[in-house]
Amino acid sequence: MTIGPERAAIRGARGPSRRGFVAATGAGAALGALGLTGCGGDASGQSRTTMRFYLQKREVIAYFDKVLGKFERSRPGVRVVHDTTDAIAPQFVRAQPADVGCFNNNLELARYIERGVLSDVSDRPAARRITGSVAQLAKQYATYPGRTSVLPYSLAAAGVIYNKKIFAKYRLPVPTTWSEFVDVCKELQAAKVTPIYATSKEEWTVWQGLFDYCAGGLVDTASFFRKLREQGTDVGPSSPVSFQKDFAEAMERARTLTKFYNRDAATRSYPDGNLAFGKGRAAMYLQGPWALTQIAAVDPHLDIGTFPLPVTERAADRKARVNIDLALWIPTGADHPDEAEELVDFLMRPEIIDAYNRDNLAYGVTKDAPAAKDPRLSGLQPYVDSAAFYLGAGTFIPPSIPVGNYLQTAIATGDFDATLRQLDADWRRMAIRSSTK
Image (cartoon, rainbow, N blue to C red; front, side, top):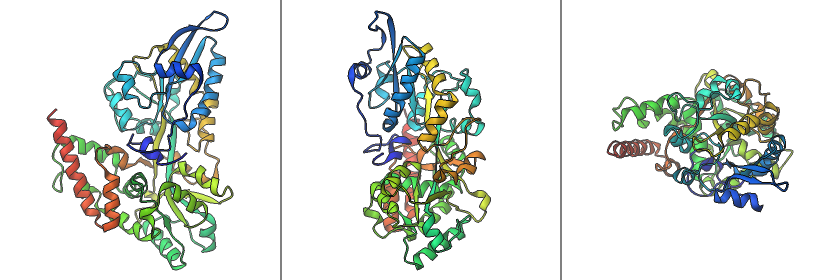
């Protein structure tokens, strides 16, 4: 894990990300890179089918190498190589998509779902094992009539990471309401402890931890963006829904949170935040499970937990921010569709999928998945179990609208209303361009 996981993981955004590529080696990698799949031969002269597997989370390529090796041993005559293409768009443009994709369910993948270039996987045995709440999440970005285009594989849940030692030292409760949260922050400030470590230098950390968290408990994000799209070009303070109207309270919450940031937040990056929090320099950190490994590298014994940011005065309103971190899909143009289905079925076996989610600090997506046992994750497990979660508002906004940059300016000036006006204007322009195509 390195820089900016959510930029690539959720929005397919530009710039550096933690998904730095670990290049595959050997003849198999060259075969995958050139897209030369098909039937070959092994040392005994028997024919062999070579499949391409596209994995978006490149930091787990080595993990999946072992899993794919197990599949190959269970299916003699079939070989699976990693597709080394940097992005999936060129594959579909050249009509050479990988046989199986393992990708974050986000706006980028939504384009291919809407175009109908992903096969229907509703008949796969595992489709019946996906929990209803996760299956609904998978439909929030896009659907194709009559098809289930993806099979959710892994769920990431994010909240407020907190230092239990600091909370215990000052006898602070885990807050369950907005006023309680503010009180905790004020008590920490009075004790000269930084309440929240922020890394505002990187735009993705701003929209993920500030924009998304504050909106999640106040705005039904899926409903809001569906209505926003249906409005077309009618976007503004007088339209049925708009950022200025629906996100006003959330941005007031965001403005308040910034008062409890470290003073140098504007110059601090994601690695800085992991290092500082790992060294106990703040009580809380608005990050997801992707940060936990980096924090543990600083102090493997740091006692930390997670809770959802409360943004209302009703404890029952608390929700966790989630995303389907990985989902499996088979392109309609796969060279080896039968083998692709076999591989998907294999990857969805309980002993395979459950082990992946356990080892990679994620939550299960199937009805029979075990609960997360890692104490750093257990605080959000009840919210995953009860479907008290939401997809982050920032993940519904295309990368062409730089919401993170707008928020950086808002933090510096204190004018969050300007950000909402700008978002309405940008969305309106995007809708106008789309209507004239």
